[in-house]
Length: 365
Ligand code: ADP
Ligand code: ZN
Image 1 (tube, rainbow, N blue to C red):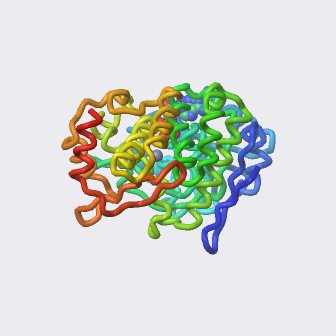
Image 2 (image 1 turned 90 degrees about the vertical axis):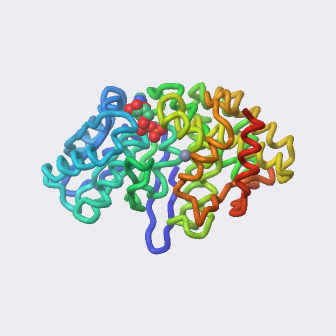
Image 3 (image 1 turned 135 degrees about the vertical axis):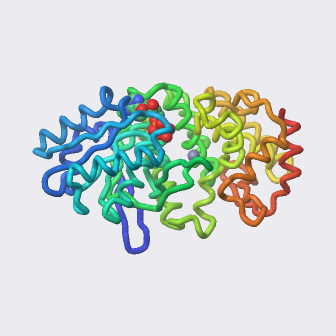
């Protein structure tokens, strides 16, 4: 199926199809300027998925140069950005060339940013290979690298020309990574689609076990929701796009506390963050306790952390709120929080009292 992202005067398509990678020659041919692509990927993807793309392109008579980077969050750095842009320039990249980002969020964010600044903007195509990248980071045009001061602080809004999603690439993804990406799937149900949360409760375990049908349905639903929200608010100015940050303020504090390390993956932090946001909303009398209980139960049932303890975080409220104050969404001393009136009914609250958050987190410890 195809989902269109409409952004005022521009738009691009997202193809979601089991086996799309093996048809990349045909599906991506319109973007192959001068009969070639420059593909950027990471070392873990080479043995698992790169050959599928290369085989498909070769069969279609499209040449490809491949640049392989090391895997992991540390690749989203100034050093790697320089290496990558130097390598792309040495291939003689021109504006009309298309750079293909084959990988997870790390590759997508770095390559998207490189494409945004190379020759003031080269065409690029996203081929996401993690569930997180397929349902979230490959759609919407946020590109970035990390800096000493924090994650994703240097970047640009830069939209891809196309996003090609093949859910079968997840067959080789480690289960822990799939589970972490699933947190962002559940997020779409919690934001504004209670029926989709019901679907997640019924089908989440099947999806995580690798059921191709359930996987494709969840990806299509998530991408559709993200495309709609991004179409309404491309640059996060109206507050609509901010809904996508559900669970991310609590989650960010947990990631900061665990040093943004493999101890707690981003999706795991978001899972715990969403459960905390619902329990905080219930504690504030905004949301029925039964809804907070359901959210907590579903997250825990999928093997994701739903509590501070399960996230491996042993810190008090003051410490965690301290981390939140470094969030890039801080605005004049206030931190906008996404709270819930129920499942599928979240809203942005700009007036949350951080002392109440601190007391809540102390009680959660
Ligand atoms: P995210 O998409 O969550 O931001 P990364 O880009 O860091 O995450 O990818 C997570 C890990 O999974 C990395 O080690 C990456 O090399 C690896 N990886 C990505 N896609 C696949 C895949 N389809 N098969 C196997 N490993 C993969
Ligand atoms: Zn996220």
